[in-house]
Amino acid sequence: MPFPSFLPEPTDADPRSAPPLRWGILGTGVIAGDFVRALHAHTRQEVVAVGSRDATRAASFAEAHGIPTAHESYDRLLADGMVDAVYVATPMSEHAANARDCIDAGKAVLVEKSFTRTADEARYVRSHARERGVFVMEAMKTVYLPHMQVLRRLLADGVLGAVDTVQASYGGVVPFEPRSRLFDPALGGGVLLDVGVYPLSFAYSVLGPFDRVQASGTLAPTGVDDGMSAVLDARAGGRAVVSASWRSSLPARAAVHGADATVTFGEPFHNAAALILSSHDARTLSFADLRRPGRQGLCHQANAMAGYIAEGRTESPIHSLDDSVAVMDVLDRLRHSVGASFDDEATPPEPTPPEHRPAAPTAPATNAP
Image (cartoon, rainbow, N blue to C red):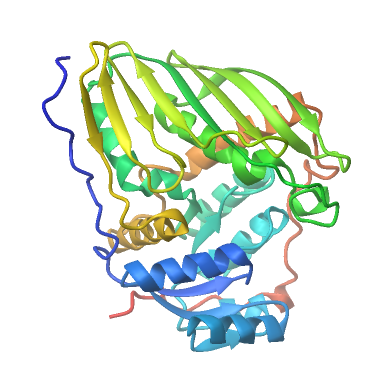
């Protein structure tokens, strides 16, 4: 295909385009605060409640972020009739059980990445969501950013030609701390689930499913992975080279190399970043929408989810539950290849006793006006 004279525009760059949902925040960690700030600053979404197992933490979080209601338990949050959708911001070890309880309460769910600890847990959440007809989406923010919207258009239009290689990496030096959730296997620790999911999900979004995976890596003293590099062969052709590390400062870069052109992203590629399209004869075109840098880019995924719900969907059309399961499958394979595994990872989450579940609403929650 001839090199274009201009780049396509993002399909949905305005994070205020979707009608508002009334959000509840499940968990009060750092990412939960970043998510709320992004919604307040850049969207029409409304954060109406927060829930924590610690009443003091819930109250402090609500006061810090101007949230009207603080609940002293997750159950009370899920029983709140003012909440349409829940953002799950707990450690990976809790994602499957938290998502299940949200589904049982009839609440739409945005689950922070990685979607779960394991592919088995992801399959459990997928089947439960589809069985109940409740909207569930992984908070893989990168998929929804404007520069990724441009990349999808370039790929769909065939501008790059046949894709041969995708490269992506992300890393930084993280001192070992056995009590940290990052290094604690009981909390779903490990570099792959924390940051390695970004390069892997990026590669999957370009190439689709992978058949062959070759990986090497290192383990922290607690047995979780803390460094990994892999070559993955895509079923449809092409390959990915991905790396993640807490032992070195790997650049957060990504590139897609095709037969006709190459796309490279500025750092960090998983947040708002510049995109450069280059021809083999050194012609270039660039795109950059950096108005919502860093974690403020979390606004796009919430806006997308609100729009999908307004359309009557129960999954994201560009990162479905099947996609989340497929990525978790590869994360399992990569972890096992480097010698990391969870003692109970073959065990699905225990059902919540009925007396502790919030009552399901008698009618679907509606979008806030």
